Length: 604
Image (cartoon, rainbow, N blue to C red):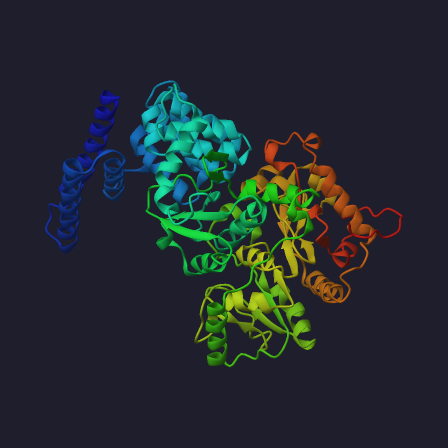
């Protein structure tokens, strides 16, 4: 490896030197432009010298690649250098150009797949696979990376990534083994016992205030920019385990890095379980892992992530022996958030006398992550429904961010919270807590409504199996179309495994495109929601019964051999009785659901 690094480093140095020498030779004739180019050469040379003397490893290579590019060295030339190619692939991943990163790393791997230097290529290609949601390919690349260079895989936390992907697939034993190796377990030690020991050692100081005889359940959370996860994951954790332990604790690495919205959710859940911030780095690899339950005396580490918590919540709600089957304990806002929000309402002269409907539509600029752009919606299709609600006497309050497209010109009566002169983050959960229902689109705020037990009209929904309805939910799904542009029926799209797709690339690879609900469909679903709240004990329609039965049928793992199907995909949350597909929208889509000739059925 030393010879490889020496050759690669020398190659980069020569490319840099030759490119800048050409610049100098081209600037011998005195001019202002020539002087500017010579000054740039001097700056780049100083930065290169700094990199050689003071930087090491990946950071040094990245610096040199940037300097070569700014000196005029072409990308094609740099791609022939393996070390430079890895740096370029990392940039591609950061810019969401995953296909280009994967193709670049594959070219280098194919030249010598068994050489230790290929470990970097396997590791970087795995990052492209992770973002594209290719789980099996990710596991294969990370496993090969660890086989070729174990210390490299550990040093860049690739083994923690391997554990995470195994955990997402429900392969807990493999996940524990990978995580134990990441934490430097000896070959002779048992992975579970080792993890129990180091977790207890790293968390003991944060649990000293809990009486010694009390049992403790510990979850690791990291929800820095994830508003929905910041409340929904602890909400499921609390309802799943509150009957088993005297104390429930969520430990958050780097809690100071949380957004204000996410931090506020921690304050809400603090009423029900302990939320503790830990020092950065100590436990940063354990959130988002599914390692199952790891017992260490009176403390049990409930190492579960979003996927495992949702799956457990689904099955607990269908298990008569579990307390969740009788209902969930929904959260309420602490008085300090209510007081602050009402003060801001008075400053903005918001009328609180009318019933409230909260609207959230995930904009195309949100997160700027193309990997889940299929969840974005066009707010203009919501305008007729908003007008109708205002005509019915509702105060429609829209939440989101300052960059969202405004609809005040079309609907002057709508209240758009982020644009208020005295906006405060307390307003969002406050209006969700007092709303009659929410119009959502499967983004973070709908999780807040669910944790509060608020009725939810989910417009432009997608069929992902992890979505769990809570109280009086109605779904109006996006249209799923085949490569020819024809609408897919519900059974057709489930047969294709569309309920397993959670990346834009999954849809592209399957030749499936999505189209938003039309304005007429959203209006019809809204009127159905309003009417349904007046009759919560209504019977399911034939279309709603068929929809639920199809969800139950395709949740059976034996029904699919799709690459994304695994032990954790044995359910579809939409089959729970708390939610119904919009019957009005079903009628507006001929062929969407084959309706049998039978009477309506009561929801169980």
